[in-house]
Length: 276
Ligand SMILES: Nc1ncnc2c1ncn2[C@@H]1O[C@H](COP(=O)(O)OP(=O)(O)OP(=O)(O)O)[C@@H](O)[C@H]1O
Ligand SMILES: [Mg+2]
Image (cartoon, rainbow, N blue to C red; front, side, top):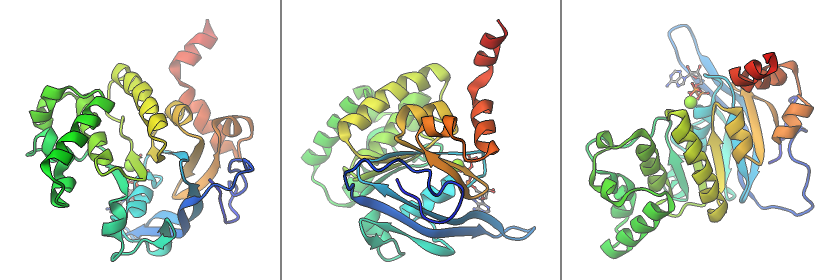
């Protein structure tokens, strides 16, 4: 990942590996405001960065800092007020978004499954819309169920009849169905109990490594961000505070907020350990 602009995190990207990785996504001067009764809310303020092919980027920051807004703009589900997103060199516009979106797998925060559709139909809805034949759909579905360790008999159930962890797997299968180049995952493990979350984190890391995709993962959890991500992007108030590896954020915080954010996440267990 590399960062333009002159913000404090501008030079904090990963060191150049020597190889010229191909830029897949570029975000230039991206800004977004929402109207509210008390005046406009600035959700994103002139973000600049690029993501290379096969890079894994974790986006993290306090609630309301603009993470979901950023993902929605990158998927083309909302339009920016200024700036643009380019995907494989092509500008994401209202006209180009539907075709480009087929190259992206998106997991919406809270899953976003259709409650009236069985798991199988949730996963295959786009493939059916695109006219894939039955055999191709069934083969892909079987592959995905194997990949995500989703029980075969769960495919016939409605979302409300699945556990939280199983629903997360259905969302992930749906995002992977069309073999996208990029996965954009908005807190895909957010609502899970810690044991299942831990289990799925391990499985997901294996899945991501075996697929070699470009992944943008939104999470609240710095441990999860460090566990998955090559690059961590820490946001606050619609702007990037620092971007770099977990080691860079810990060893060379760009400003006191970075240190406070990491310390706050170290958690009660460590505080208890230190008191022993
Ligand atoms: N549709 C909307 N209308 C008005 N304001 C919005 C809308 N969507 C988001 N916002 C506001 O924009 C800001 C950024 O919201 P966003 O959902 O991107 O945050 P987030 O970082 O994803 O938060 P969380 O971690 O809680 O999911 C917040 O102040 C939020 O209240
Ligand atoms: Mg969000």
